[in-house]
Amino acid sequence: MNKPHKWAKEIKAWADGETIQYKANTKSDWQDDPKPVWSIHVGAFRVKPAKVYLKEIHIHKHLKDDYHFLSPKLEVPACEYLGTIKVENRHETK
Image 1 (cartoon, rainbow, N blue to C red):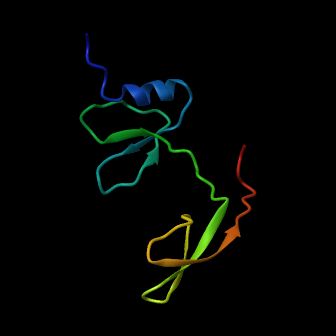
Image 2 (image 1 turned 90 degrees about the vertical axis):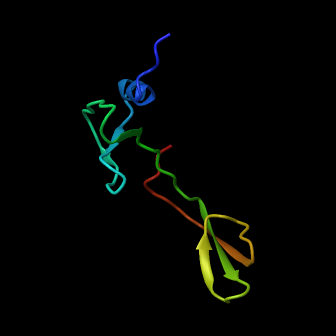
């Protein structure tokens, strides 16, 4: 059996209409690539990740250093939970 192409998963996703991103090297950022050239020797490809929208954010107080911060996690070690802020995102798509 033949070994699948290095970017087979990404090529199939692109054929199904997904946005593909390209990264030239470890120091560059991911860029949308509307017409990828599927080289196995240069850079990296990925399916563009879906946007994640927070529904709420949690307020915590660090027990030792006595500072406050926001976190998407409800439970944070060595911290006191103070409350939750509900987030409305008008740009979210269903």
